[in-house]
Image (cartoon, rainbow, N blue to C red; front, top):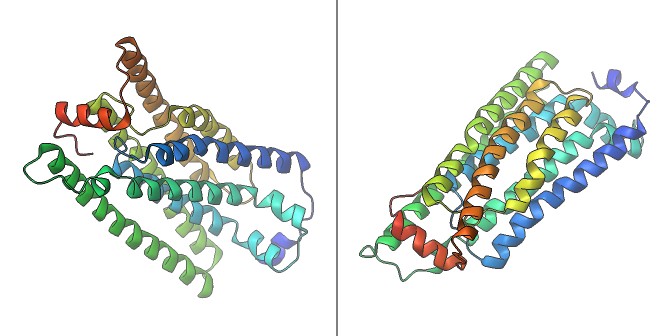
Length: 284
């Protein structure tokens, strides 16, 4: 099968330029969120379930497009294609991988700067402490789930490659990854929407990031749809997630506007304390 793909030698320079630009803005879109977490050193307000679903969905998408473009990838590794051609044909895979790295970084920072780790003085007698400890236990379960999920996906993918599965079987496995990614994407923003709605606060979420990512998701849908070797199971994830993120963005803008109207200028820690006092049961 690799030989058939290796026969293709034409490349559209416009696709390469567009792909590079999309990749650049993709990275830029995650910078505000990453910087906010590093600057405030407080990830309260971000749902652990939302992070779990987001990372799982992106991982499934990454392996979906890798399997669908495996023959092209093999030809590039074997030196059958020039570097510019490989960059052009695999730009979709590169974009998804870079986005996976950005999401993985946010997940790490979320765990690293979760308030429970920086506030060990909380005890079971303290209501805020109980909430933090309960949510930290959820985060620990999420970590175990992500490790197990990543292990299973990597093993399945390696088995399909080294056991030389036929093309239809590989496409079927990629389809399962794609549909699984769509399912997780369909619900990944629901825990975050609920937490933001219950807390009535943006928390550690970055509105500038969402302002870039939301329209960027729909641009990425179009670009992935025209990539060689991909199908609807690859881009549907971004369409669903972009729509739900748009709703979350509207919610965050509303609470920010409402907060500014009431002149409630609180520090991240003060905001956290007030939210927990008013909503002691908002775990996730």
